[in-house]
Length: 151
Length: 174
Figure 1: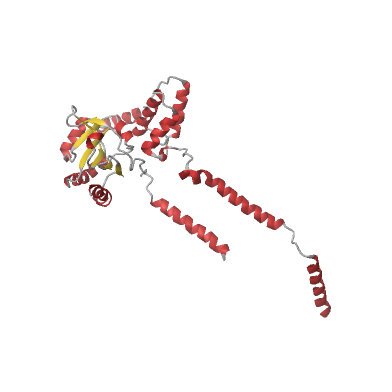
Figure 2: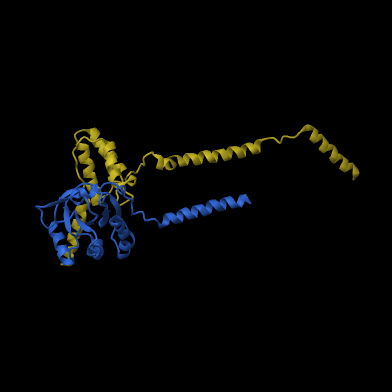
């Protein structure tokens, strides 16, 4: 009996993995949109996977939702907005460029500019010949000589 | 002095930020629906599929929508908390039976007790998507104005009910 149960579970597990929906699209463009969308939308159940990779039930439902919206003639942007309205910015693997994400997008460049500025400043300081007044140099020389003659 | 103070300050800041990040739960995604109108639905009731309940029917009162399913193990753990909330008789507790077989759901309620004023059936999970549900159980508190005021992700415990959910409800009722 136990063996039968184990066997059944193994069968079930296999069939669950094999469940990949085959959607038919009206146009190749729509299919491309679909593929791009499910690659860029995050699955909320298994958070480090996108909808395309995830086998979670919610991911299947959201793929179906994406497909249906595209079939109804909605644009990619409309599908994105639909998802963000419900699940928040978190569903987007590529965050939008807006006031709350300026730092996220621009931060690395800002850091680069700061580091470059520091490097340039240091290099310049190292390369700069020491600028000494000729009279002061002559004075210093004569003083040194004076010292030496004293000895 | 600044030679040593600056790296130290940067280090302390980093440790502080990382320590704060460590305490956050990445499983809890903040809902964009807070302070927005509760999404409309009109769904058949679990116990009487000829009748339906809609978001509009609930307008004018403070209510709680608890998303549950008979297949959800943590819903079983949360069941006594939902029952405690319903027994306070302060708000109407509506159950959203999410992606479940109705026979299983009814049996589950018979077995453990039915805390819900009504449960409605979201068989294909469409309403769940509208409400941004991504894990069961989830609990929403909706004000009389129809705005979602709080969302609890995952099973409520007696502590989270008293400390997080009830204060919102009391404020809405006052």
